[in-house]
Image (cartoon, rainbow, N blue to C red; front, side, top):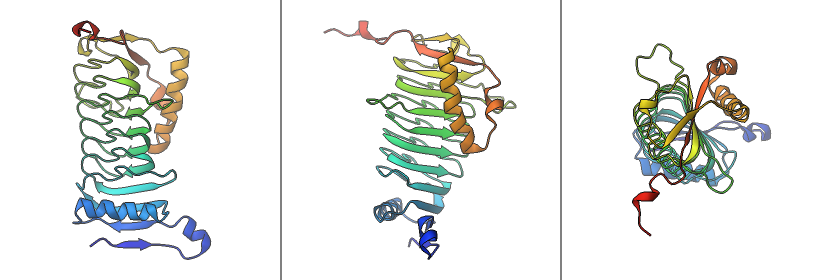
Length: 263
């Protein structure tokens, strides 16, 4: 059974009231239905307590101004196809976050898994800790939208694989980490978008499809804008994050495999 509690009775309190849903032991379909019902009623602040691996939280949700806070570790496909709401995860998160996400924001205060932002078309994904493999795979812009993924820790192999648009930023803020800031095959198959890596980038770890250059002044301004938002989410100091230089990775060809096909 899902328990829903709502605080506040005066008109002013109702504007900022938080709907609390106890998710402990609740099957993922029932939990997500309760969340959708709350959003349909016009609720703007929702707190999920006791989450433990439930899939699809926030999937397909629409609605600007909706904020869902998750206590616990959500399961795969968090925010898949989401368009508008903000999800704040107070713990770690699993795989496939932001799958084909169109708009909104996901903030993860811990680590996150593999295949983040698959085919992501818009919105922002901020992860304070480390991330797994194939982050940003097939990420693309859509019309005037440009998706942004910022990872505060390290990343595994195939970061930015087949990337077609948007922005990936990797910070490597844990100086004591023994793990390299990024794994092998960085940007393999990349044919659009841009990757920024804080610190040096080993060309041997990169796919043949990307080139490494110094950021321009315009790039630096964009980085400052994106990172200011990231730092605000995690109460970090922007000057500290930006004190290290960045490298910019961009595709050397818009059709890296064009010669493999016959027309």
